[in-house]
Image 1 (cartoon, helix red, strand yellow):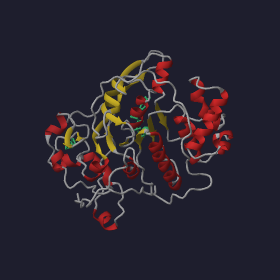
Image 2 (spheres, helix red, strand yellow; image 1 turned 30 degrees about the vertical axis):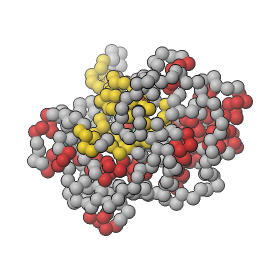
Image 3 (cartoon, rainbow, N blue to C red; image 1 turned 90 degrees about the vertical axis):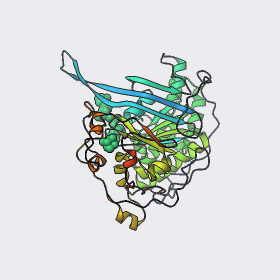
Image 4 (cartoon, rainbow, N blue to C red; image 1 turned 120 degrees about the vertical axis):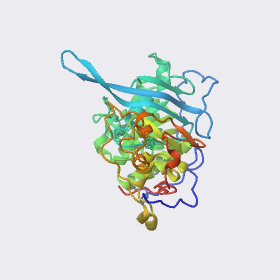
Length: 411
Ligand SMILES: Nc1ncnc2c1ncn2[C@@H]1O[C@H](COP(=O)(O)OP(=O)(O)OP(=O)(O)O)[C@@H](O)[C@H]1O
Ligand code: SF4
Ligand SMILES: [Mg+2]
């Protein structure tokens, strides 16, 4: 593997409160159909369920106590056989012992290969999938599992935005009705108040009141994503899980939505769990980044640290695939292509889950320890952990790479 020079200086990650730098991935000029978002409208939040308790768990970021604290979360999907007599013959370990924290107004990027469990983790956090075990604490307490107003008010604080906004927008409903639905379901406001709120939300996401009357097929991809965002914002959430929310968009529209996400974060102090395959976009948006492999987080830390000094071989391989702007540095880098597909999450390998594909283990002569002992996350620097027995042996960090790069690749 070729050693890449480390960047001389690492710009600060987007701060969780200050004005966000504009995303410059591609020409980001605002078109007539994708106007700039306006300031938020006045809106009284739905009543909070109950005041948060005093005890707040510590978390990895410097930003204070965790708003969201996920502890040892597991989601195992049963594999069943038979039609008449259904029996469970195994379980897909989609999420397998994940601990993750999110502070107020913080963005945590979540990356990993297809099938690593990112969507399952996100959907479980917002309550769409019941966890098999583990806890999800929001403001220091588990959302009330009993149905009722308290449960709905707590759950409304955690919202999700999807890659395909049409999945959350009914094709038979006008955009305004889709945006108003969470308000209607939660019996918030009169019809007139809801209409007013929809107008404010459209303005907030950079659309005009006339868009309320359009059906999803009458909107562009970017406009649909803005409507999806408006709907997610209707109940004044504190946390948004954005699952590949910009991946399907054209480059220029993607840049606009990324900038919109940052503006909304600044204005509304939102926290994002930002799931994406595009590591350059993740680097641009995230304060911290978590890397998932086969249902587990193998490395997490401040984006600047993780991108400039990755300490898990899997992270190194992911970063090696990201193009860098400097042609000389790009020419020197070596892409690490992992052999084979990820193992079956129904029967993850013993020991380190990555050992069947790990280039570092191969370089070290195949230590037995990797195949028999599961590595616990180790602190490699402040707030930066990696789950590998040999974090100190990770050479030169192929990446050096996208650190400091705020432009996304053109794909
Ligand atoms: N409802 C389900 N029933 C059974 N298995 C599931 C279910 N949902 C997801 N899985 C499995 O769980 C694993 C994790 O899937 P998930 O969709 O969370 O991955 P992902 O990281 O989001 O992938 P991608 O990047 O492709 O979106 C996969 O093996 C998937 O097949
Ligand atoms: S513990 Fe071994 S197999 Fe796992 S990532 Fe580290 S070197 Fe590779
Ligand atoms: Mg997914």
